[in-house]
Image (cartoon, rainbow, N blue to C red):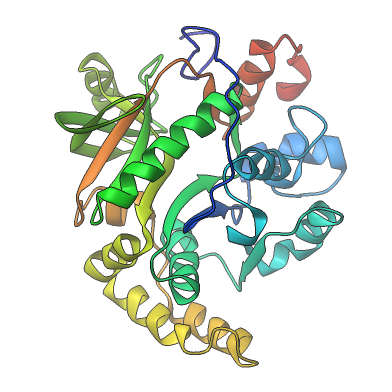
Length: 324
């Protein structure tokens, strides 16, 4: 195993100033997870069971605030939607107090990542039918943030031109990690300023260890679960792959912005199936998928104490306490 379970930087990242987008670009920030695998760490730091996105694990700010800071270089708070759970309200309010506040959508309960992505997609479509959206998890470690957001800006621009597609970011793997999604790039179908866009030939979510080894040696990429798409393409993916969930969210749209919205949201989630976005939509490939390879960045999903410890060591912070 390599020392850091991340896509490593191959060269120093240049600090590029981003101009905040003035068009129809929106951000969806996924902050509804419970972070159970890091609960021992967050309990030790805070004395409670807060999910990891509300914890300052690397640096002085929480993972959620670091994510919002990163996004804010490109997308303003008024076009940023944070998706949480209603049970997270005390943590969310504490984190966002005194900040330029994004929109917060509190799900009544956890129905998986498909609902976490598609609920804000329907909400955004109701606000801006021509929107392009970029989806970001709230628990990632990115060392070269400016370069990363420049890459995000590139795929967002490309998504505006490729109206029926989702464009995923893929990281060069350092080992055959079975807990990530894997992407097999196919033929080149376009370019951005940072390189080619490849049609995705195969998407495999959390394969077996043996299959992950084959994918690693075949030159496949880790799915970073950061992607850009027209909001219409996201909604269409939900319609094609998850018609029950799609129907519930379409009916919900007529209640958005009314006094009945909280009631309608509870009704929708009471009937909604629990589904995973990667397995139900990305593996199904009901809409065209392309991938842009990210190079020269240090990145990882802070999903486990081991990944957190490796990320801390990569920036010179002793991390023995994480697993102790």
